[in-house]
Length: 341
Image (cartoon, rainbow, N blue to C red; front, top):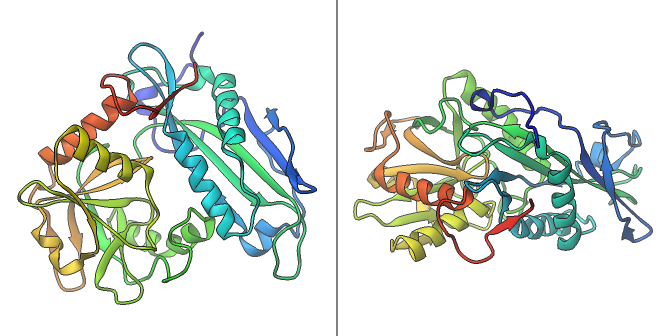
């Protein structure tokens, strides 16, 4: 199979339309069988639930070319489960795991020429999303829905790849207690656009959000979970009901504990203890792990001991092990890799 003529190593994290996308519709209490289409446009009612009341959620996962040439996805069953959790919270019909995985397989096979080659540093990013397509004017769930999935080849999420980034402590809140911070709802990300724009204009890669109730504990950034390393090599991640349950973070904790023999801990992390950590990273599907070099607060700048030049040794080992599993260089836990081609 001939690949597309793309400079894979120069790709950034942006949208590039591929040949096919998957579409399925929910009407009369059930999903249709769905199928592939070449049309990248969406036609819906002007009064669609997604437009009137932001009734939408999404996922993000990656497809890799492994060392032996296989094309695989990493733990897509967890993406299917998280989409179901999001749909349940937003009163939308759940997409069955079987339908989700079938759509993924068909989409990737149809766009195989767009899957970046092994060793290029690029991947095929998959964006499944679900939204209220039927008309609604009173505040209520939409009567009809669409489940769609598209693919686009991408490079690193942050410019500079795995170079340490600078974060800004946001004066805004990301998610309210008992709200929607634990699901991947589009409305959560809309709320982060304004503070995110402010951070970018002032030279920061991302915001740090604190818990909205007390503003004393670190939660996450606009698009990634935190992972901290203590002086004695323990892995610590924040625990909160308003943090999105990152599949990458959950996988990294298994890698750390079961494969690398590290001690791991999930617990609330107070802002005042952040200067005590020797390494700090952001983790997520798009970034895998991005090292943090500094966090600017209103009254001080927290300089991470690992510095602004390179990722620290513990996070480097974690990242290398996880990407090794994804790329077929290291054998990971059973069921983590779904072979598509």
